[in-house]
Length: 168
Image (tube, rainbow, N blue to C red; front, side, top):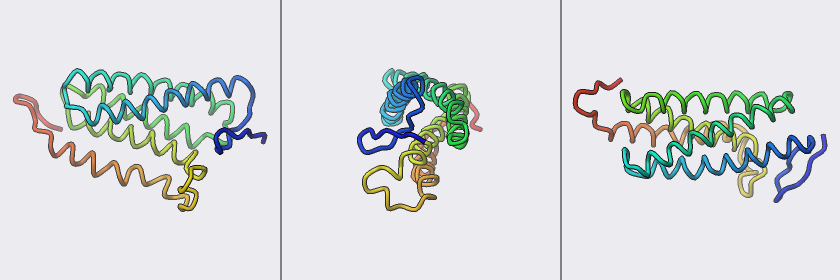
């Protein structure tokens, strides 16, 4: 398979459509990473939290759509990334749709989505990142969740149910 090197990271050269979709995918992924962190770190219910959360969700939709196109083009190499992306998008939708009635599910869904997003990135590009090339392959699959799950659990534990709202 032909590859091109971009900043020390090998990228498959599957033609102009693939590279165009990849550029969109990378931009949307960076948007997800920054806006997801900004939403998580901002006060819950504040305009900033909602704004960054909406941007995260829309950008994740673009990540999922672009990843789907790239997975069709490279179906033999990207099937596992498609599954991770589908899980991230599904978790985000569950989290978004439960934001008012089930705040714990909102936190778990969107937090799990963020962990899945990072898992997909590390599984695909982790071995090519400086310093991470020495880690065993399994760490790319589990580290985002090992770090994310305690953070999600803490956020759920700190969440006080609103009056009249039953927790799940």
